[in-house]
Each structure stands twice: as C-alpha cells, then as structure tokens.
Image (cartoon, rainbow, N blue to C red):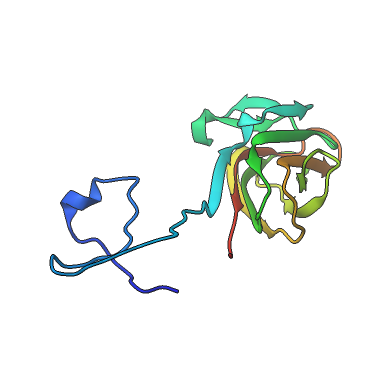
Length: 170
C-alpha cells in the first residue's frame, strides 16, 4: 500500500544514488520498521553477456549499448544467462535490430528446451544499426536460468542489443 509519494526538490540529495527512502518524518516523529524486504523488480542485461550459447557471437555496432550486440543469429541458435533467473518473471522486452528477415525470440527457463515462458516477434528494422524495442508478457512460471532461443527464416535474422526481464506483483 502506497503511503507516501515523495519528489525530491533538494539538489544536494539528487547526487545520492543507491539509497532507499522508507519514510519522511520530522525531528519529533518516532518511526519503527520491521520485516522490510527489498525486491528487484527488473533486470536489464547486455545481450552479448551470455554465459553459454550456440551459433551467436558479439558483433560491434557503435549505436548499441556497450558498442556490441548479440549477433550472427540464425534459426535455432540460442543464448543462456546463468546469472539471470526466470523466477517471478512476468515481462520481457528487448532492444533489437534487423537488416535480415526478422524472426522470433523465445524466452525459456533452465535450458534451450526448457519451459516456454513467452515469445516476441522481431520485425525488420531497416538496418543492423537501426534499433527498435519489442516486448511481451510472460505467462508460465519457472525458476531456472534464462535462455533465449531464436527462430526465423534463413541467414542472419536479427541482433539483440539488450533485454529486460521484469518482475511485477507480490
């Protein structure tokens, strides 16, 4: 339940990062807390930071975040992310480019053949350095590491610059 909505107007406070404000109060107020938990709601990942893969590789593209994308993607290729769990994931979005035929990103848990959580269509964007955001809702629940499986026609389908795995709800 939201109790307080605070907009900072103090420029000195704006320089602080990494702080969580629990409650605003005056010098005479008494405040007590217990059972406070911090939950990560989403994680954004550079796609080329995969920990396992088949068929893909990092490709230099200056407008990409970090200057690289996950590219040379063909039908059936995949990328795994051991450091990204699918637990509680309800949304997936990606920054993509395609001068190829476009295709589909399947979001899977545990392995390239693991449970399918959702999929999103990647359109032709007009060039390898012309990026567009695509997104989908994830409907299945699973707890394994994230795997992206790429589907489409022939040749290089598309590149993935970065993606966000969202976690919303309780």
